Image (cartoon, rainbow, N blue to C red; front, side):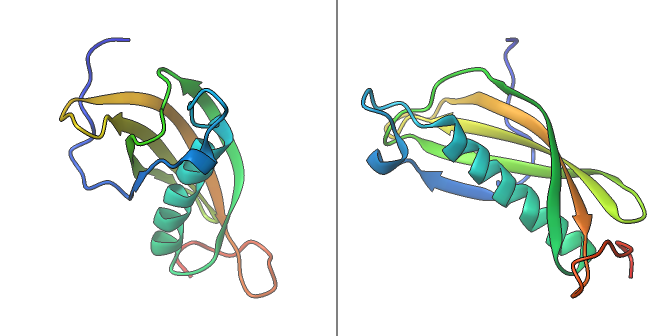
Length: 127
């Protein structure tokens, strides 16, 4: 993996990992990390659609490095495409050891959300 730096935006979510989120070896569960990424993408989707939006797909999730108990995880979510009812949001998760400044990309994925109305049926994003 080439040297990279985090996106030049504020993280959508920043959290410290806890023992309840890890296996017996102190490694954070991939599902926990995926959940954080889905939440971050959901925040961006709800803000853009000005209402409820639901996850319909996640593509291309790749794990580049492990996350350990006590690491700070910063999740960056950026809207990359808007359709009539759907939105694509690219998400990256970066980790930083508690006592260090260096950050490392740990995973990334692309999420697709659909804006829905009170009837839970798709609605126009710009409605």
